[in-house]
Image (cartoon, rainbow, N blue to C red; front, side, top):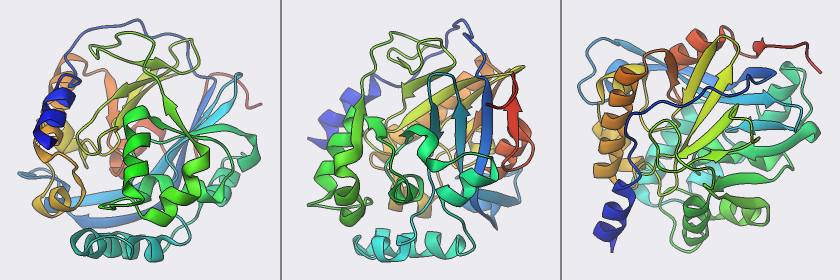
Length: 304
């Protein structure tokens, strides 16, 4: 069954092709919940250029006339108790993740730093359902958007958890909404969701790390950005198509072989589109290149 799922998901691995940029987002802000430095070798198998991995737990706030969204939310205030619900390997890894982010803030405080109230959000868009991306949604009230495959997987995790804490899945279950990729092909991906209908924010499937992992294209003033979630952990790995380090891979990747294929596909995408800034979710340097400083906002128009 797992092999059949892998083969089915392989059809979603991206190829390279062009697409019109679309409308520029009025304002986008880098929201950082925590940051830490790790050995470079943890950032991917075969890392040679990056000696220190400047890691981050971050999200992106999109301000748009049709409603604001927050992409990824970091850890919850109950993160340690949550990871203790997981099997031994994932629990041990999760405890290390939580410890590395001991000095952290949560979405309400982080959004306030960017001048946003949590109640102002139209929705929360999650790249994938791991506790360090979805947990902070527990501190907010907006609907939580995941892919349809991810929603189904989250439900299964409540009974047979591997990497999603059952208590988190239970508490968010009534707020989960599945995204339908009904906007056609985009940038070589066979499926996409044009969230606002103006190509300013386009969501595409990136399965492998989790069954329903997804990436997000953002059309910023003067640049285009591709948020790839945890398809790779670092920018060097994304550029070179490197798999995750063994310790990260074994504890987090749902289908490691597919995750490796997606990493290689991201590298091909980068070679075809070097003008698009790729941001792995945990690479602080990549965020800094695209956005400058945490809580800084790239604006095409005055803040609302």
